[in-house]
Image 1 (cartoon, helix red, strand yellow):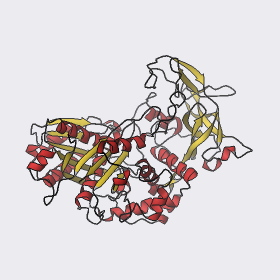
Image 2 (spheres, helix red, strand yellow; image 1 turned 180 degrees about the vertical axis):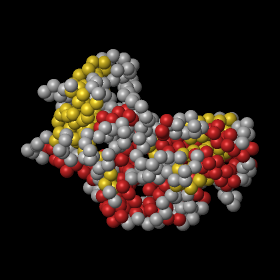
Image 3 (cartoon, helix red, strand yellow; image 1 turned 45 degrees about the horizontal axis):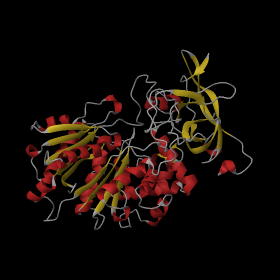
Image 4 (cartoon, one colour; image 1 turned 120 degrees about the horizontal axis):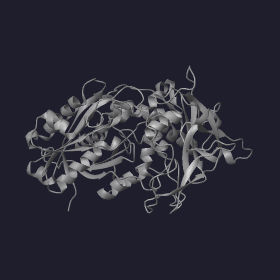
Length: 400
Length: 147
């Protein structure tokens, strides 16, 4: 039995600092995705909303928020929270109900309005919350973690700050003509290196911003897609081949935000794969595909250096070789394996519950040949990857 | 009065050390000390012995904070003075984060450098001076510490 579902429509509200309610972005993205699919809102049987608990406003964002804003149509609702992987988990919920034969059309929506500056923990004295304690006891910020990973690449693999800057240069160029990107401006390596160091070795321009934004995906069963002739010009629609949302395997040996320690290897030894490697591995296994099959990747470049880690975690090259791919232009559009053709978080900034869906939107446009000004020629298989707090992460594979 | 900023996580004697837990069923070591459930998936242990972890380890990675972190971080000086941090691999098979000791920066360590645990005051509240563990680079005479 096929476990594929069809991506009937995708849509986004442009990323930025617009100062509106997240509902506005979510509804705009949903309407765009429904129009893209040619499916009326009345036909949607399930709405899954991606939510965020950041800033203590958990419960404000929910599937029902979007369902009500679009006008009650009697659809069932679900709400997902999985930190940065929220959108993928929401997608997985929708896919499950479709594959169980319980619905044919599902709308998945993620949207967020973000504050300025460092993402700070919730208010109040919370001595049993690692996210609060890491700030209180040692002043450890999110960029601090990104910097630890970046520094390891430098000391172990000979990466340089210039390499990290070149990731930004590449992604800035990729995003230049992306209408949904927040930053659409060329950046030089010197611009990056001249920006202030936030957490050594990372400069301000190595680190992604936080943004407002919204993204939506309409999923249907393959049967529904065929019956309604979805897809472009008689071609098959883009299909979801895998959604991996696996948790880490004990012991988690990579220091992970917001913790200040890893689990010990003293009893169980070192696991075969790191958490990020296992996210991709599970996706490949589910899709029956291998890294060699991938034409394009959208990965979570919370920092420039993290993009290099992901390239290796996805098996697109061996450990320690991502800088060579970057320097050879392999990860640039036109290269062997373009990474972040959308411009990535470097051009978007992070809108947590929408971001994993935004990755899927971009791959859908890439596989349909609709990514104007940033098209990866002939792309047929795409993979996404991200990781968030508390053992959440995802990897989605789509193909046509 | 001088007290740890967090109770029960480190000792403060002449040779201070982190206080880890050891599961009485499977021996899994954890820091911060486990109090409820052993995190080893094949163990359902709920009792733990507290033990001091090694005071010396090697640097897994390191960074600094050039900008003052947001609250609940408590600044130790005005104007703000940046501090460095290191994630340190201990012989017990785990990595523990901490600030580098006062006066040390990212130029003083490399991945693989040897460091030792020290305890320093970090801020003063209504109880008095509060202390935290920090990592201090250890002078090494051979190449071991610069691997």
